[in-house]
Length: 367
Image 1 (cartoon, one colour):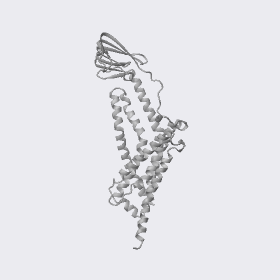
Image 2: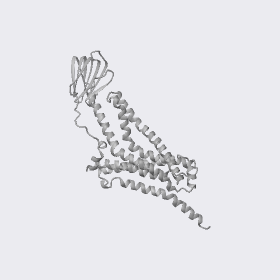
Image 3: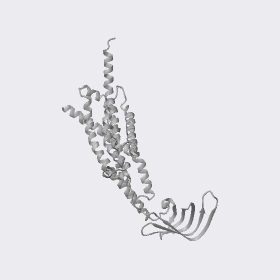
Image 4: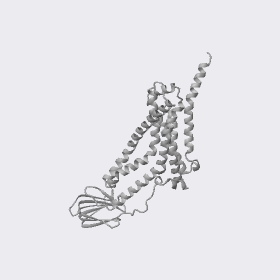
């Protein structure tokens, strides 16, 4: 019993350490593009710099439910692959340890991660998505009151009006100003030596007053433009009100999804339930998948684990869409996918025993 506990702790530590490393690497890779996008929007002034780190952290929390199962699968395959390659597993099995005993430490780690996944999928990830939407909405509303910064393009009204100022004077007015407007299919392009920018109290109306400039009006490609020179030109830009924030289904609470009859909401609910179940199934699949034959490299089964995961997650994602469209009865949820994967896993567990019995029977047949 003492030897068994030592073995369990050793395998638990090896798998847990590998899982942490794999999950951390996958998270960094997945966050790279999102971090670049957040930093780019912060540099453009669309996001306050004070919320950049929080948005990155929220994005990481939203991505963890997808990364934890594949991290566990690769963690088990890599850890066991090293033990098989270094003949540690051969020594363990030769000492009379049952192959079924290898599931014990993996199951202990898997149950902990499944509970963690349930908390992520049911509570933490939806709350993070809701908070991220709120932060982005606050950034947009704050941007309505932000003054035009010199040396940066500033868009208004969904991009229908674009303003650029080369510099700013000491009194706050803008110098060497460019304005492009799109109205009724016609472009108005104005350049002015000086301009002032005022904002209404509610931030819904921005008024640009241009001084000493020239305006070109027309439709690109037609070759007919009207040129106007002015000493003063007032350009009002109306900003749509924030209205009621539309909450994405990913940001809805699990209780709302559970009690809803909308197929899209129910599909999202079944997706959240599927994530902890995937953790259990993938861990069960990883142990037989990590078994190496003599002289195989320690990474020989990694590609197979990656393929298995992508097939699994693709099938779960497709089943979610089928629920949304009514193709699959909602009452089935995504459980049938897990059952199919479990059957494949049991078959994978049984094949080595069948092959060994067949070889033994052939050897016993007299010549």
